[in-house]
Image (cartoon, rainbow, N blue to C red; front, side, top):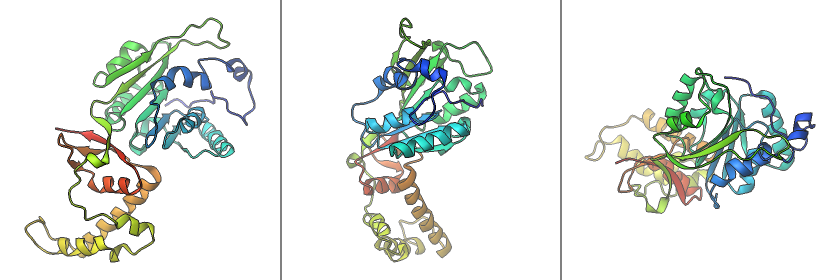
Length: 314
């Protein structure tokens, strides 16, 4: 993947001649956000997650936090851009997370999200890695915003033109698109446009409407938050005889070692969700039954959320 340079400007960074030209342009920095990203975003961003792939020094991350997104995540492959991003976050008291990674390999590490933005990013992907990325993207986010520009032809890279972008997202729903804006009178014009695509299978739904089976986990995460010994919890006292004793409901009898490993992994998952959010949506059927993710749903509910990202299956 190509290493990205510093193409955004934020307070605290000396202005280059190019930054001076971009000031007030509708195609760069906040102008790009206002004209090519913001129109696709919902009015209410409460409980929602925003991810910027190719976030550079953090212009969109700050604006996403200001918009009210609950969790904001950025990733960039340029180490210097990430360093400046971290400095900018500190200077404005931001809470977003930022990581330095090859953007082609980052998809598995990203949280499940409501919006993933790729502004002038996707066409740097080698075509084989882009197609692999797309396969995983479909199970990671409910919306993807693509901001693209006029680029020279390169069949070895992901295409920047409208026809190929729509082909890439043919299994998604196209919510809307923003065509090229007039170039006249802009201090630093560029031919660019954007799309918003919606997953046909992932959506944010109300937890209260889900059937998550038994209530045996209730109260367990509150005990963890208070520092209680998980192996003395009410949940463990119910789970232990159930898993270590053969009965009509249990398919197999666990060993003590397996039970301990299960509890340790459950606690590790809870701590990860508290810090990073869900890594993948839960799975629900047409009747609203959770078929994968009962524990994650209860964790999210305990943390105070009323909604959760879910993948619907028949």
